[in-house]
Length: 221
Image 1 (cartoon, rainbow, N blue to C red):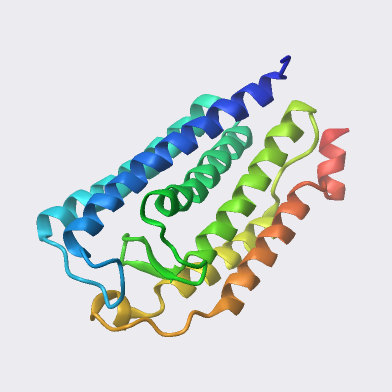
Image 2 (cartoon, rainbow, N blue to C red):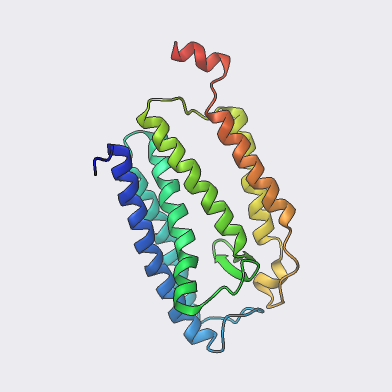
C-alpha cells in the first residue's frame, strides 16, 4: 500500500496512541484493584501519599510523551501540534476502549470518572473526554493533511480567544465540584451545556484558523 508521508506518520502516531492507551489503562486496572476492589464508584477513596505522588508524576510524564511524539512527527510548529492532537485523541479514546475490554467499564458513557489530577482532580462523565478527544483527533488529522497539501492553517487572535474561552468552559465543568474532588462527596450533576459550548467554540476557532483573513491573504500573496 502506497501511503503518503503524512499518512504514514499519522498511522504510526495512531499506533503509538493505541499502545500507550493500553499502558495507561493497565495502570488504572491495578489501582482500582487496590482501592476499589468491589468496583470503581463515587465518592472517591483516598489513596496513599506515595501512590498519589507517583500518579501526579505519571500524568505529567504522559503529557510529555504525547508532546514529544507530536514534535518528532512534525516539522513545523502547527504541524507538530496536529500530530500531538492525533496522538492525544487516539490515546484518550482507546484508554476507555481498553478499560471496557479489560473491566467491562464504563457501563455507559454517562458514568463518572477521574479524568486528571493536576492541579486538582478533574471529574466528569466518560462521554466528555471521549467527545473532546474525538474532536482533537479530527482536527489533528485535518491540520496534518492540510499541511501536506500546503493549505492554509494559521490561528489569529480571534481563533485564539475563542479556543481559550472553550478551554476555560470545559475545565470549569471538570473542576467546579470541589466537594466531590476534595471532600469525598458524591458528584453533583454534570453541566453538559458547558461541554457543548466548549465543543462549539473549538469548532468555530478551528474554522477561523483554516480561513485566512484579508491581512493573511496579503501575506500569502
